[in-house]
Image (cartoon, rainbow, N blue to C red; front, side):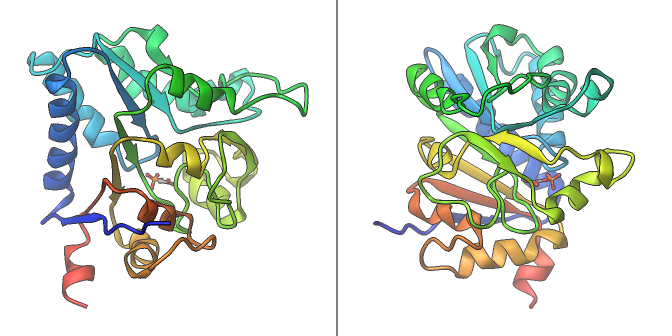
Length: 253
Ligand code: PGA
């Protein structure tokens, strides 16, 4: 198994890093003559990147008509009262409703209010869909404090495809800031697997703020995949760029 060194870009501040990521997305869309598939993340990390994309669209610097999007994950078991906590709502509200993307081309691994009736539900149809549509050209990732990427928690296998997974207590706690309290946070989600993510042609991982430092250090110091830090799966991909604003913590320590 080949191990690759990610490109590691340390920016002076989050604003500069956001600008780099948004410009890379815009460039990727504009340079593509035909359709283009983006893999997108939710959470706090990409919010300002999405705001930059909306601004660029409004000033006619980019057109989303030929773009399809594949989100990394979605909670399972939200009732209609909790629609606004779904990642579908997050994406619609932050980006999709504000640009000219065709909503039929915005995909999630599961509908936010789907009832999972059978244990035989084939979640990996999402992987097949992504492959059928030509694969993800550019995947945007955040990272969890415990090193998860999407909801691939510590212990996830490298060959994992899209599946239903349990969230760890740390992730439930970290995500409780979006809910009234931790009890309201769904315990499960459907997430792209590590293998799904590694199929993307190019990956940008964004890590902002000191809370992400340990995960980032685990990734940068690893020399092979370590299940305890799912982010280390990225060492197996030849085209990964890590973007961070952790200049003080990384360069001065
Ligand atoms: P955050 O989450 O962007 O809200 O920090 C990232 C993640 O948990 O993957």
